[in-house]
Image (cartoon, rainbow, N blue to C red; front, side, top):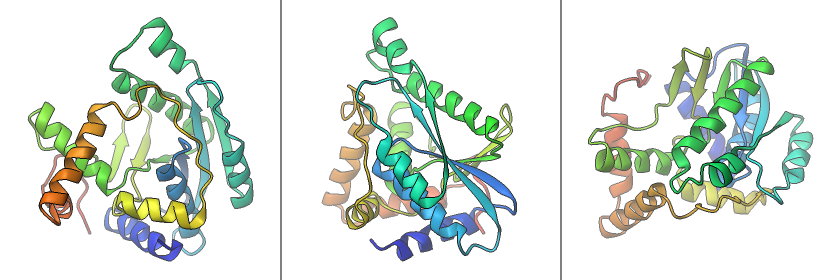
Length: 240
């Protein structure tokens, strides 16, 4: 996928859900994976021509795994002239050595978000951009239906009262295949995920289930995504 198409989908999300306002300072959460790096490229490209001016910074929460080399991300941010901060933490040690968690994802996400929010506030940001794409949103809806008994999915834009930060999801209209295509075309400097439970989670189960449903019923994923957009989910902003 070419950058121009990524920018088109990103601008669509930003405008339909009023994600960016004049003077915003947006922190991009960078995990080192393909999704967050695609988001970084997308917002950097959008910044060049978008009528509402905004600042861009990047933040990585280092969970404390060994051999997690972020030098490729540092180099990319230098090339794009984006301020980059690494937040070092002991999250991995707490989860796996101290608490010996067998299902660490929820607690890990909570701790990562807390560290990311704190860093964003210290850097003067008022918004944080997460790299959730179309597949993530559909998978979250399925997880909520199957394990919580409710129809829910990530909101495109959410204001966090406690931190006075707004979370936005600008690549929500990109599919995972779009992101993979972009990663391959532009040779993104991926930093491998070191989490020992990666690929063995309920989210992975949902990913495989969506793939199976879409294979057996062509277009099922897109129809589920459309149902989410039209679902009047509490907390979702009005789509323009």
